[in-house]
Image (cartoon, rainbow, N blue to C red; front, side, top):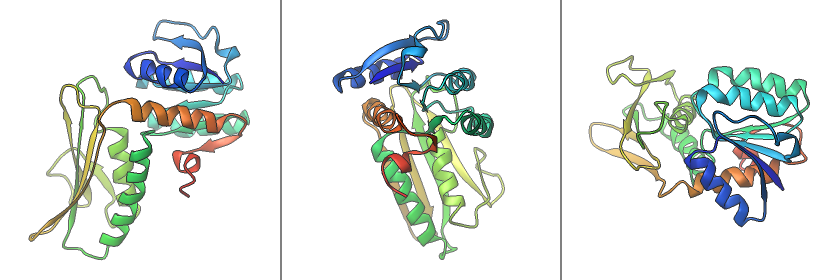
Length: 234
């Protein structure tokens, strides 16, 4: 499989290593200043860039018939436009706030626990996410996905970075600490106890592997998908 890497920072380099180990070829390594020359040779593109570049990268792929997997976060206000473009072009697109296989299992656990806990109003929900200092968006896309999982299965209506915001908002404590690949915790707290679920990433390799697996799965398909489709979790 021939892969275009859109974004060639730390994550892009780890994705390259994993892809090569799995027998794939890299036909484009696009940094912020590079052109899209070589994209036409790709079977699929993987976008791990920056929020300001994601829409351009995804659009370029969809307009040229290249299936695209995006793990860039912080641009989701434009996501409906990319879904519409994918449908217009009869293309193939996967966005994931986190491609780690473990995190996607964690999403399922979070949904299930939130649904179960919704019957017990004495518990309030809060979250904590910790990432490296180079991460540009806060809270993380993964934390937002976790919050949405709780909101869909409870009486909460939104999330907030303000601890003193509306009681119907889930408080997310977003921390930035050197050399932390990603840690996410969800707390259900009452006056007498706390139930906590937690996912800790030990390196970027899990994110990279999941994105390559998603790219392998996407080739030859048409439509807008998620990692639930890739992992047959629906």
